[in-house]
Length: 197
Ligand code: GRF
Image (cartoon, rainbow, N blue to C red; front, side, top):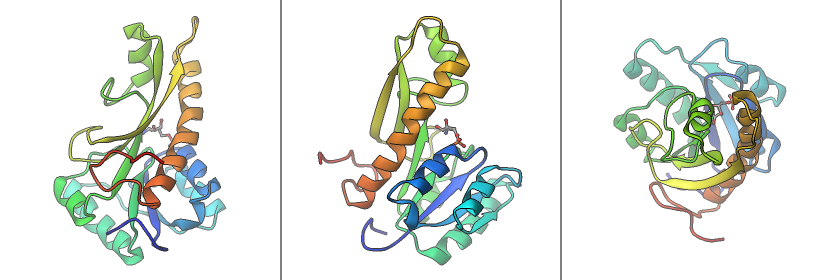
């Protein structure tokens, strides 16, 4: 795979789909060819529908089964990049290899701080003054992989989890489409940091 030309993007979701919406509303939106959800109740499926993008559910019974079926769907579109947007599963090295590593994710913390769940609560509990989000290449580790871009937000006195999450989510919605656009323009290959613009 390579990030160029007119090849498209496939987005994997599990839930709300607000990052998917941000991608679809951005300049790279027209390149989204397919949305795949492991969760039939994901609101992201309706978001895809609003934008006229095909969406499909691939149920997660076992990882190998999901990955086989997802690769079949993804392969039809020959995308140059797969973007995880609130996709709540860890993918295998074999799956990532089939996509030649062209898989990115957004995570709601400044990695390597707070991989995994409940990042906003953990940031507040740690007393951090700064929190944020990270776009990174995906590898087989939970929220592992080379960092492509980060956006920081201040933790304000009196913040609760909800207020902090909302501030981080706004940053996510700006950072993710912008970073995807840069990757699609060839600013990094899998595992590489972004080259300066
Ligand atoms: C986002 O905070 C994202 O960083 C994380 O899961 C959340 C998904 O939200 N991986 P949405 O489905 O994009 O609204």
